[in-house]
Image (cartoon, rainbow, N blue to C red; front, side, top):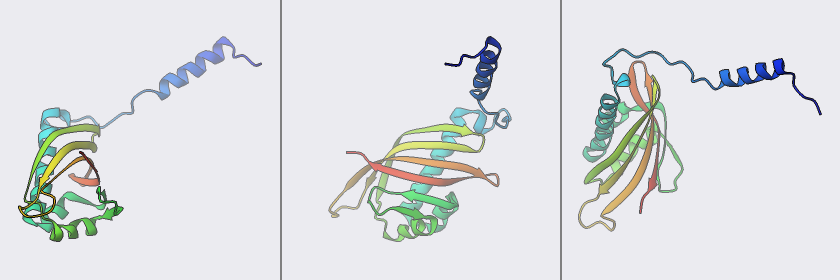
Length: 159
């Protein structure tokens, strides 16, 4: 059995400690949304609200403007992943009458990425077979060209 000398052991421990240090991120200017958790949350609440208002109003352009060109979405319907064009086209089939958004949280990853999670209850028009649907949503937002774009969406049905 080989043993490490005290010197070698200290070098290994120092390397391990150094490798565990958090990575550097771009410093944020005071007062920007990224440096202020409340402002960041409100900014993403507005973006998520705009996303669902676009579905409610069947506004493809407004929804498309929120999505990254390489957007991928996964819904709870079992139909697999959707690219941006498919997700935007689904607005034509949408029957969202109203929605209630709650429990929105924002977890900054770095200066240009954030994980946004929330629950949402959809209300569909009277007379349809299913009137309400509740899902938990995770979205990855990336800052690209100075604008926040939704890169990834996944929903899971909540019962």
